Amino acid sequence: MSKIKMLNPIVEMDGDEMTRIMWKMVKEKLIAPYVDLKVEYYDLGIKHRDDTDDQVTIDAAHATMKHRVAVKCATITPEAERVKEYGLKQQWKSPNGTIRAMLDGTVFRGPIMVKNIKPAVRSWKKPIVIGRHAYGDVYRDAEMAVPGPGTVELIYTPADGDQVKRMVVHQFKEPGVIMGMHNLNSSITSFARACFTCALERKIDMIFSCKDTISKIYHGRFRLVFRDVFEREYKEAFEKAGITYTFTLIDDAVARIMKSEGGMLWACRNYDGDVMSDMVASAFGSLALMTSDLISPHGYFEYEAAHGTVQRHYYQHLKGEKTSTNSTALIYAWTGGLSKRGQLDGTKALDEFATKLEAATVETIESGKMTKDLVALAEPKPERPLYTEEFIDAVASTLEKKL
Ligand code: NAP
Ligand code: MG
Image (cartoon, rainbow, N blue to C red; front, side, top):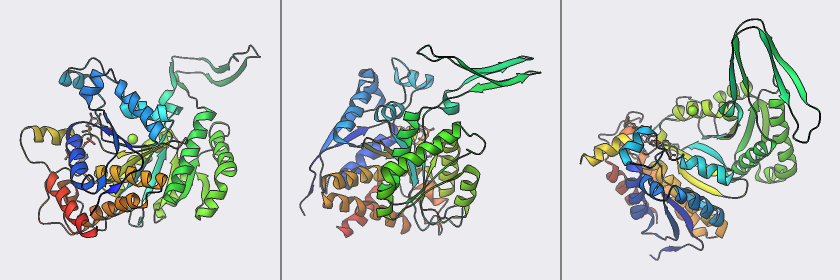
């Protein structure tokens, strides 16, 4: 069989530790034999980021703007311990943070569902994808302890010298605490566009929720921006795709989603998304069955696994011990990228290959061949967990039968 041709390259961002090892196996065993891979490779491994003073991360983001599709392995975000471990020049920033800011993107987390692992919420039959706004609110606030009686005010001083606006927040009669937070129309607009784009991509209904009955101006702004962007830019496309957009209060959204069968995109404000994405992820089973797609309103797409570099397993591996680390989400990072490349270029064969590789991965797990992390969750239990490479080989042999 001749290999599938790619018209344009995808940007490949390599990473760290156990995921770097699996990344290479996935590429060599599951993709390269079938696809005539065109990639622009960037080594985001911690050593190379340090050697290049993190320029490689910036270059990789620029390359993503050029080629529009990227796949990324998990990377270390260094703290003090990592600086010592790898002899780094400094605590480099999170590559994901840098890339997200440059692409103006939103991260969407979605579960990969298999029949032999049931979600903790019994009614959930389809994936629930969460989009979390990643700018502002409580994550960039100003906070103050109020030591005793006194007045706290909001003061806005216009840059053009217009009249100052002020407003009393509270007249304290005793000690307390105070917080100021902000958001930007531009950021909310980008977030809304990324969410609508993602819902269209996946052809699923979308819900946006906040609490604008209580916070009429702040939360109200989010609701209005979403409404305006939808009406102006996405309404027709949603109708054509047969999907809906619903705004609802956050408490109502929680109640609805718990009773639903899933299959929607839930757009969350920063804090809601932080909390809800962890709840939804753990209800679906395992981090290793969770993908993370970065979608930019400017038409850039980056795919990765939601989990980190699986450091503990890597140390086992370095000691020469066998590991049982799950490569499913990494495989899906690759299929996400290949499928998007295929769609953008009109290379149907590439898109179809990605779909078959996803199906092969799911079928392999459903046939009882899985890594240790899933064994505890699966029903029925398999006889024994597969080692890291054994699982990838098992997927390869399922895939062979499909091609
Ligand atoms: P982690 O890599 O997600 O792993 C935490 C634990 O979850 C593992 O020890 C393992 O549990 C389990 N696990 C995660 N992925 C698994 C997989 N594919 N197969 C089997 N088990 C899996 O988080 P971490 O250990 O806290 O972080 C390690 C490094 O990753 C850090 O340096 C952090 O900066 C980085 N990180 C990167 C990203 C990213 O690039 N997107 C995201 C998060 C963290 P057991 O040990 O119980 O088996
Ligand atoms: Mg969280």
